[in-house]
Image (cartoon, rainbow, N blue to C red):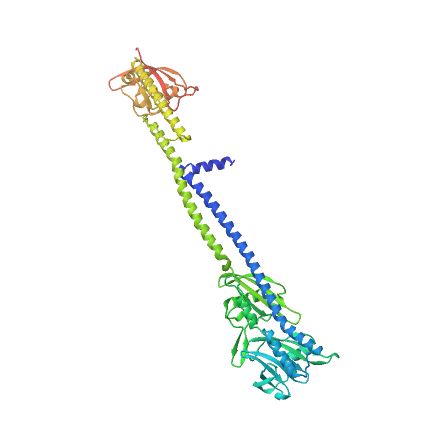
Length: 554
């Protein structure tokens, strides 16, 4: 139950509103509130579902990239390991150049992700096989080439056939970064990323030192890997509808992306790598910039992180995950998915829900209005009929072809109207009989309202007062009818006035009143008495006081 003050306030406010509005509006408010709450909860649940799905998708894509890259990056070291083991087992001889070159030509056919397989020896000689756009070639630098780097076509036996290219300068593998780093580390290593001279693509070298049984360094085995295959894999990934991914070094330099934007630019004979934060692709650029803002250094990202940020005012989901191995790789894999890829269906469902809710609201409004009319119309007719009865239009009848509560109410109203008509007819007849009786009484009878206004004067009273009913109140009544104190020209005192005393509940009889007119003075004996209702209270609503006005015998 509501507190009484609140009930009174609600009644006061609602009591001024039409009944039809009272019936329709709360119904519509409930519908709007329910639809609004359900829609809001649906949207929030959809938003949470989007966040969950986006997190799962980012994690899945990131794991797929990591798995593929681990496999891809393991191949050069596997090739190196196989070659070094073959040398240790005597299956390959570093001095047998023709067999060594044939082996490399055969091997490179099976590892299409590798661009060059080779060895460099401690005596400065180089043997290997290289993949080009036109096929595979022998790569050699020894006394037969003048210790210059030469490239040859080969026959099916791995024999050199035709010189294709030769460097102008002496080539000594012992001075190359990959050789020096592997010999110094005495274990498998990766070189820094560089631009391949022939293909003009980003590449990296896997190097492994070769030792004899006595631990003497014989040379270094190497395999060069191009990142174009990683880029092809990233491009082939479907990341939502328009998601993107890229791999970069801790320094921020791009390695590969899933977009057409380049990872490096060629400026004359020089090649300049591009930082992710300077990429021409706005998503990659702003993603890297957000990472730089979120972390003082990219080196601090030690585990997988999921973030959200805005690109051109649109929310994006991001996952950044480290990619490391025990040979020196330390990169970052970044996956970016726009929220709009997931929200499109949710927004469509939201619009559909809104339209359905609007249709439901319109339908409910129409149904509510029709229902309210169906309920209110008989009440309005009942109200009009009641007002007609108040105007004494006794022939008013309420006809409702209904058997519900309103139909019963209409029947009860008609019965009440008939009883009222009968009662008022009886009352009118009784009033007429009373008036006839008063009119026949040979005494003056005067009836006043509670405020002193004359209500009824019988013919004898009018004759004695020399006038009928005039507008007056209890104070001006004596002046209006010229009531004086006998033998004087003073208006009769109020405290002795039979009218005022009767209205105060006193029965008073006085014989010192005179009614003065222009041609005569009539001395009167007046008896005033109040009229009570059934409860013993003076009737104030009708305010009746009855006076017997007797002409003084003197």
